Image (cartoon, rainbow, N blue to C red; front, side, top):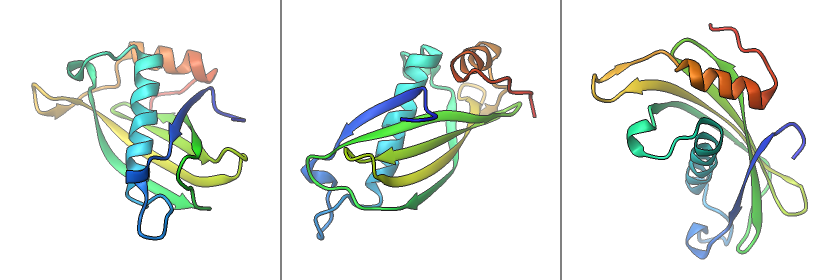
Length: 140
């Protein structure tokens, strides 16, 4: 996918469909989550729930075309902003014919679950994201 260095493949399953035979809008949140977790595992080397130090603060999805049973969707994920305690992931969801299915963005807040408080984006995460995205993110 053009502009995305990380892409997650997601097959549309029968249980993902609504009464009209296309992917239910709520299922796209799961697709984005699968791509997000894949990105964090691959790029940030997150392997356990204890290391998954984020909370979803905001999600926006714009639907462009429908997806159907058996299609393998490609979900691109890229960081577009890193702040002091949060970062944004942008997504495109594309069908097997490269048609645009959805555009989405997610704001993730870094969170210390033991202390029950927000925390700064770890320096190691910032370094790894900047390395993958080939972009310098100034703390904001």
